[in-house]
Image (cartoon, rainbow over all chains, first blue to last red; front, side, top):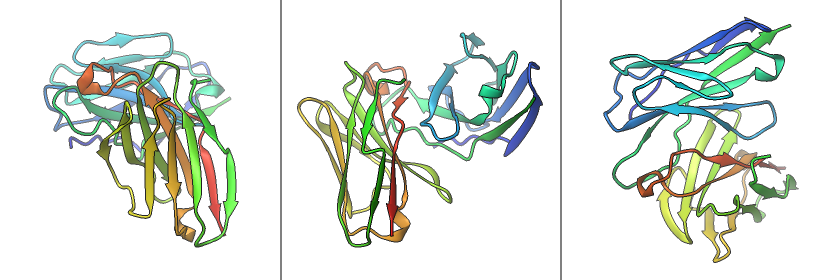
Length: 113
Length: 117
């Protein structure tokens, strides 16, 4: 399975933008890039996903490099509620087999007031 | 609220015992996934069901088993419990598997915290 690499932790200030990087140099053509986050004492929560083009939704933006070997999750204005572990996951949208998401260690995002 | 319901929220039991965790997926979702999260292992995929049938297995121990019933709820059975089985167990659901037209978006419940003493 294609793997992702993320920093263990990042720190940002409240109301500032946050850029969370993810490297996925072995990504294949049918792999979508998904981001989930896990708030303290909660289950993981879907944030956003994309294939090639940048994507925006109400929670965040996803910027995907032209060669698709890396991506960045952008929180435009972080709040204390955004403090969580953020997971970058590759999901293959072809063939059969397991759909179970393979979670790595993720990035622990700390927001300072 | 993700729409996925897990019971019980907390469970304390002794080594050697057997427990059953229950999951009700979001209305309309046909696929159910079970995950285990412990401090040292992170989130581990255990098993997936789709419309009542087992679809994929991950790192599930032989002492563990699961099933999905006709009403689409699922149960995870953990037997001969060991101290190391203490963990959070999450259930997630999706409309369909990715290869079956699903988007890959999973909705997670709040988890069942199992403590084995």
